[in-house]
Length: 281
Image 1: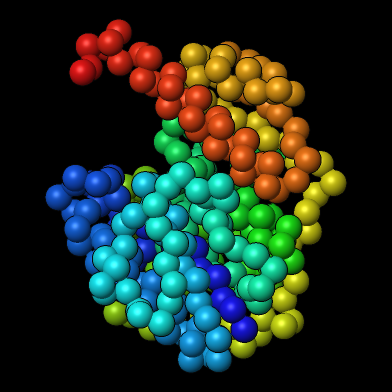
Image 2: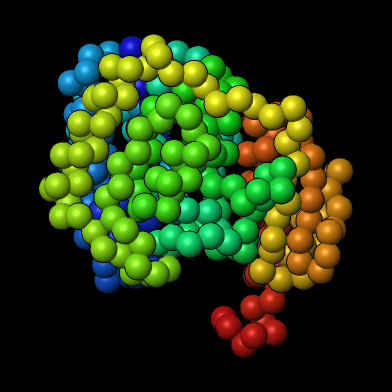
C-alpha cells in the first residue's frame, strides 16, 4: 500500500508560539527538529504496518521546513511552494490512506495557532460552517478516492476531526491553553503515540471510506481588510457578503483548493499595497 502523509507545524508537540512557526524566529530551528521527528514517527508507523511506500508533503508556510537529512530515508518528500494541491499536493488514487500530522483548529475557533490556510484570512466557512485545513484536504483526498486515517494535533482539531472525519483516528499531542499557549506531551511520548496510531490507521485502511463530498461547495472567506475582500470578489462567480467577507460556489474539491489559493494571493497583494500607508518598508 502507498501511504500519503501531510505534515503541518502548528499541531506538533512542543510548539505553541508565533516565534516557533515563523522562519527567522529564534524558536524556528528547534520547531523544524520537532516537526521532522514527529513526521518520522508517522513514517515509521506506516512502514511497520506494511506500507510499500510513503510520500510526505511539507504543508507548513513556505513548505520547505523539514530537515531533510534527518527525515526517514525510506520516504519521498514533496517540498516547496506554491503547489497546485497545496497541503495535499501529490495525493492520488494510488494511495490507500492519508495521514494528517501536526494539524490545528480553523480560524474563528479556539485552538493553538488556529487559522485556516493563512493569517490573511480571519476565517473560512464551507457551506456555512467554519472549515479546517484537515476538512478541505480530506475532501481533496476523497476526490481521489482516498480516506483519511489519522489526524494529530491539539485537543481542538482532534475533537473536530472526530466529528467531521468519520473513521479517522486522532492523537492529541497537546491541549490548547490559548492561541499561543499549550499544555503539551513530551515530544518522545507524542511520537510514540503518533507512530502507534499511524500503524493502526494503515492496518485498518481497507475498512475506511473517503469523506462524502457535498453536492454543493460554497466557500465564504472572512478577510482581514476591506481591500482584500474587494480583490477577492473579482474572482468570477464571487460576490461580497459584507465589507470584509466574500462568497463563491465551486464545482469540486480541486476547485475549492484553487479558490483558496487565489484568495490567498489577492489578500497578500492587498496587504502589500497597504504597506506604504502604514509606513512599513
